[in-house]
Amino acid sequence: MRVSIVTPSFNQAKFIGRTIDSVLSQTGDFELDYRVIDGGSTDDTIEILQSYGNRVNWVSEPDRGQVDAINRGLRAADGDIVAWLNSDDVLLPGALARIVAAFRAHPEIEWVHGRCKIIDEDDREVRRWVSAYKHFRAQRHTLQNFLTENYISQMTVFWRRDIQEELGYLSNAFRYAFDYDLFLRLAHRGDPFYIEEPTACFRWYETSKSGGGYVEQMTETADRGAVSPHATLRTRLFGRAKKVAIIGTYRALALAREAYRRRL
Image 1 (tube, rainbow, N blue to C red):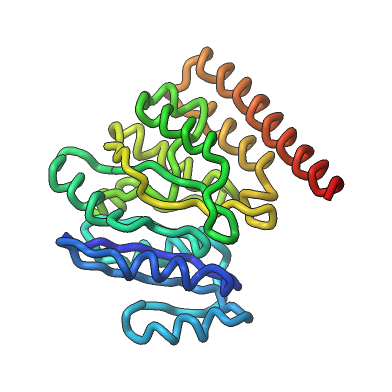
Image 2: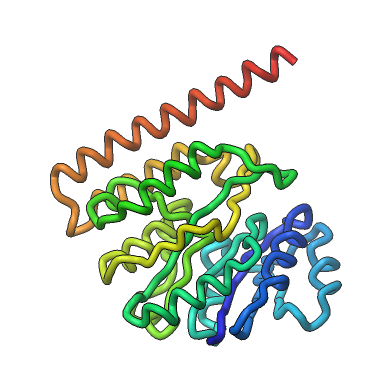
């Protein structure tokens, strides 16, 4: 089985080496097709990419942003299963072996995802309660539950490439929820297989896209779930209530962090 992973990149020299290493260090009974689509970085990213020689298939040229870069990589991918891994996230040891084993054991399944840890800029695990909550929700997945919140971690999701054209690519109509939009299309086709072992790490920091834009991200997610033809009135109302609760929690955490800094 051949696995294609796409990493979109732009000025992420601080993290991209750790991302690449986490992919290239994967071992198991599979072939790896790894592609980095860089948007013309002006930091040290190019030098880092060059240091890997021919172990990474990469290109650096202007693009139209993250969605465009991922879609370009997915269109070029030639694996049996595909995914993307952002340039600040990492795979955990053994992740691809577990992903491939799941697809082999369940030929009827079109997509797979796994448990995710959250780490900070220095690779320290943080927000364990968020990871535990998502794990709890993923174990109890239903389409109606998924329409109310996105508890599936993008960096752990892989799907079969032979459904890509029918499934479609990422939509640039969304700035934050383009992953959720794609996963809903997958979810409408069938339930995912969930790998309960930790599979990848999501890197959270205040200057990241998710770290600074959580209000817009939660709003887009709630709005996307609400327009699904499968969303009941109860699901739509529940989704809106969850959006308010989640945004309130994140704002409270941000205020607590700021208060802590002022005391230092």
